[in-house]
Length: 301
Image (cartoon, rainbow, N blue to C red; front, side, top):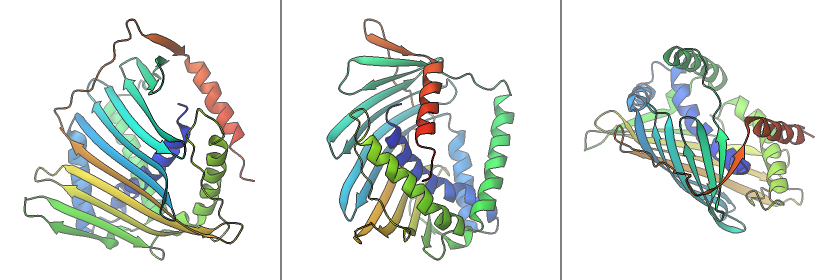
């Protein structure tokens, strides 16, 4: 959980992919988006899968952060594991995480300590009913916020029987909400990244502090769908720009690539804690830490 900045970076990239997926609901007449949404639904039907993820963040071509990770998930058993390696300004680091039925286990690559956290209780509401309600709510929210993006999407039939779908948004086509909220969100992330970089427990990633001319220049989203109508690969590239207080121009690029394999046949790795050094972290400790972090970083000054 100390990898907070890593989580923020991943969330930005994944958000770009989600804009494409849930934005489809606002464009029923778009063939490309309809194909993508159908494949997304079919992919979710696979109760297990392996995801290979790569993330990169650059500033004027200089790498600020890279990540390479593999996640194995089994939805039926509610278990999974993640192996990730990431590189920041201080060098390469790694971590392992194991999601068990009743707990989460995290180990930093350079440590022999396994941190064990009790899983939060799942809602008593029936799972399918809860998922349907969440899905409907997300569709409605994204349709309202992002509007009709489907008209910018394209589709191509591939020789192997699969399909390729793409969505490219220029500065003028990016929803006004993103352009308006972008400077506020970016400044928040930049402030947090510089504070986090001063702690050895967090990633050292210093985003440049940009002025009010910050903007989202371009968003590129692509997906490859196989002949079984399952998503095999999805990528997102976001281009940002702005100037710092000294007048220097910055061109930032955030890219995320996710490749799915072994759909329906993945078996996650398990962890046996027998004989290992274990540190238990209570749910209350985590709540207090999240509350403290939120209070510390919740101002937009």
